[in-house]
Image 1 (cartoon, one colour):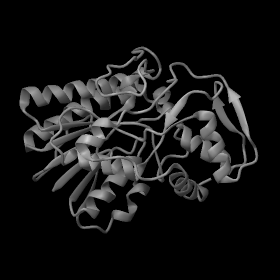
Image 2: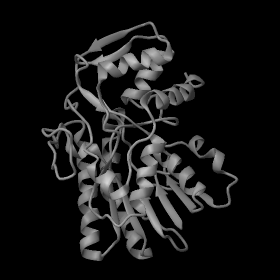
Image 3: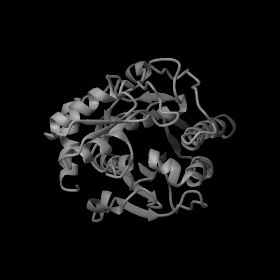
Length: 309
């Protein structure tokens, strides 16, 4: 297939490029590099089946030639970005998704939206199944990302129902691995960076809030499986193994050999208290579940960051 990946120079997008090229497809990676980096895809420069397009998807998208599938990943997704570029996040979730869907409609391409567990907000149901509608603060700091993705899901389903576009929606839970930005603001690069610098790890609140962490290769496998499936309703993809942030900090310190311990700070506003996917649908529909253990995934990630700290 000839596949367009928006956000193709980002953390997840670049790994998706690698996977699809390895599977024999032709890949067009589109990115405005607001949070992505050509460093993530520089190793693909000599591949004749790969092309990078420097473009902002909130502007009109033109792609010459046939396109068989569009995987729409473009969006800043880190807490530091919610404060720094909130309007750009809202625009890429709304205008960017609209433009990408327009290309899918024009080309007769299958469309996969990379949505997020953030559509569930600070959930009142645990773990979170796809039929849960969420508990989101629309005017909070995190609301720019949460509501942009909720809108993106709504317009994707509208294009599916009204225009007959062949759509897929994946709800991505916490994902980590090489190529994350060290200044990302999310818990894995924060903790790993602090541990490798020999600093105490910053835990917000008392650390009792929970997360589950999926290694990027597992996530990408779930995305590819969903793209090639017949499922049009949202599917959660993430690791259901849950641990507290305090437990997670101790794992990072152990693997990085950091004796500096942990420092506690106040909990940010609207930070979810629990977050764990119900992956029953992914298991039954896609035959998918995570394969990479936390220790193995973190060892790989810490190794990647060692040369960058």
